[in-house]
Length: 454
Image (cartoon, rainbow, N blue to C red):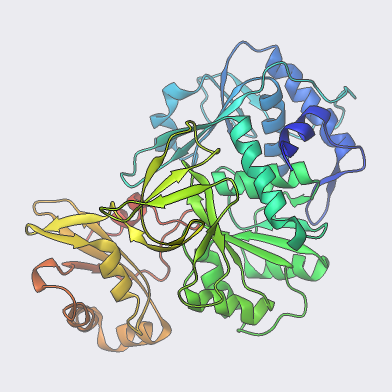
């Protein structure tokens, strides 16, 4: 099964294909074609090459994406449209394709549902466009990653051949944004190419998820560890009479406990996807056991670095055919299976002593009063290690009754079982929920903001 995305983009949807839906409206292939043709015409008549594309509504986003891709434009997908982020990217795009004017000084085509759009046929491409996504990376500065249609098509085709047998003709709903590679692939491109309808809105609340689960007999949920780890509690850990047929998770590994809690409510384990914006999908797993291995997708080749255990990767989803060294440490079980052992690029020096932030976070998260933990370096008059901790219910109760200082000391004593006192966190924060973006990933700037004031 190859090139299903390019084939779909070349021919366009059939008139009866259900493209998207929400609680009060649907979009058919016929109407979608007219909308894409309308905006395609505007884009081909415009001389600008690089178009920033952003829209919260997935239906409008898909229309703009298809129109720009067929028109041969370079599509710039920002991770968010906060003013500071757009200012950083200002020189990377010529014009804006969105439902709102994001850069008033630049040419703008407004994405909206055009009621009287001319009934032009599906447009034909002479030269496909490409995508540039921006990921914050570990430094917090936007990093550009360019993807060709061929690369994304290879990944979409692999997803279909790998998971189609698990997916009936179901509908797709998502808690993650389509502005990032995971949501772009799983919520927009793969559903379009495989003719599965998607929800045009983002699922933000458990009640909304339950509403659509009860409405549809066959449903696929695209989600993240941050959302899924909290979902069972909102469902009272009860078996649901109507549940998604399949749940995908990406953005980081799920804990074994979270995976089992999802199974308790939905009667099946979520499928976790391991990868990144740069690499695309690398491997997948279902956590049948606590040391569950990851299995690589069929086109992926891996090996383990003999010196530091780093993952080496060869993939059709990246821009070259050479081996690529990743910052993930693995234990290779066999040619297509491995165990993740943390990140290699989160080694810091505290008082001239080397410290693995991943190792300390892992230990912290085994404490019964800790749900999630994240460590970071806070710059100032003196460089300090800081801890952001989302507490368990028992931890919250202890904080409320005994206070922050007492809780700090308990967690420090726990860390002393494995680390020297000199490397322990000097500053602690206990937010109600760990700050994450729409992809369920922790963002360095949001964590740092917790330490702006003492």
